[in-house]
Amino acid sequence: MTEQKFCQSCAMSLTEESLFGTNTDGSKNEDYCVHCYKDGAFTTQHTMEEMIELCVPYTVQIGVYPDENTARAAMGEFFPKLKRWQKR
Image (cartoon, rainbow, N blue to C red; front, side, top):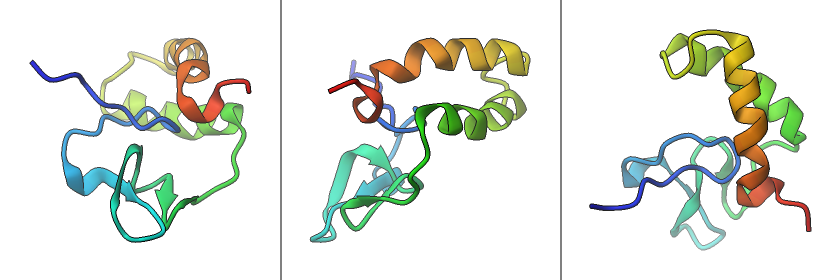
C-alpha cells in the first residue's frame, strides 16, 4: 500500500503525476501541486489563513466536508503540519 500524498501547500490529494508542480528545470515536484507550484516557485503568496479560505468552498463542493465550518476547523488543524506552513 502506497502512502497518500498531499500538496504541502493546499492539501490537495496528489493521485497522479500530472497533478505535481514543476521545479525550475521542468522536473516534477512531488511536494506541491500544479496549482500551487510552477517553475520552482509558489504561484501565489497567500498566507495559510488565506489558503484555507480559498480551499473551503471547493472541499465542501466536492464532499470532503459537510459544511464550511467543519472544513475550516479541519484545515485549521491540518494545514500547520504541511511543509509550506510549518513555523521555521
